[in-house]
Image (cartoon, rainbow, N blue to C red; front, side, top):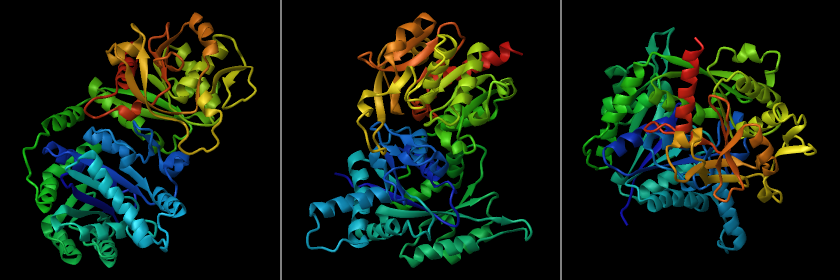
Length: 539
């Protein structure tokens, strides 16, 4: 078996510098040079996975085909390198400690005192090796979460130090993402934060090979030389990471700095022939797009757009394919009512209700859906968005005024949405939902089938406990609801539409998780197209 090369990405000075985007962008360039790339995200928190966290704590939970609930950075990895990630590509401190403690309880360490070194660090190193071996990657990029100096990430950094000692010097490199701020009062770029961040790395035995410097302006040669001198790297290894308009411009910017070539040189790998023109052309074409359409996202986590990160990116991809810029209007459904719904949604060309959990904000979502249905505004419901669309239709069209989901009202006389049978005996909350990829059969002649342009089964990713109650299917069909996508056995409703509406569709799965820069998700593409048609027809 061939040995993979490893690139480790650490971060310093402050959080949120964009290590995930940096890893994804570098991965896209290395892939464009002919290498098979995979990316591993290591998160230093004690949660086993982010599945039980509030989106306000950690942004969206990204679900992989194999049902892993992972960090949102895995979404960036998939969107940039167009390779499906799995549970191999994300590990948390909680997972690693849990695995070590389970082994200790089984007696695997009999006679030994179980310690951070070597037991925890060995388990971390095993994660490095496993993802390389099982994916067959030429290059593994490892993003170490957190900021250098945090106590939580120390075991990961120590494991990295040991791993570098165990391997040939040309098999691993460390890229340190740092910040070079501009202080307006002094009219200077300040290098001291970067110097101190690298100092912290070197104190624990790690010397970075490349410094990736986030900055809002190009670094002068004198500043690069100063950073190089005090951080013990060559000047060519101090790379500008300038602010850009969209994240998809980052690989193009890295290409201009020859960041990818420097990395390959340090790994003793050939640069190969670059095949990146289609990416660059897509970005250049999108920069020239003038037409704009406004779509409302009606949810309860709108104060933190990262809670819907994959949705916002899917709109960019769909906009590219429709030659339109999608302007998103964030509408807090906790504050939405029948009295103010027109004020908030009267000037939009499309309405999306995303997934979520719990009763908070539900009435506002129902009002948004009613407004879209009654005014023929294109509507797209995702997961809970499908469920609330069913509830709204049952109440206002079928006239079942008490129709509800048992998630919100266990005693509703009309449970049009109910707990899945497989969920009724579940006690633990973490990792126990319907998770991962499942097949769906599309009905011919429907908007869903026209969007996917296939007669074959599709596969989409899920994250839910509740489902449509089939007892109400016939009554809803008679009033104009179309069940255009179902599980192969016909027991689970996956997609609904309305017969007498220009574009009204809800899906139980999360299509945003499979949208890519190279190919927009069909449902997002068609929803944006419908919104654009509505915009021009209503002028």
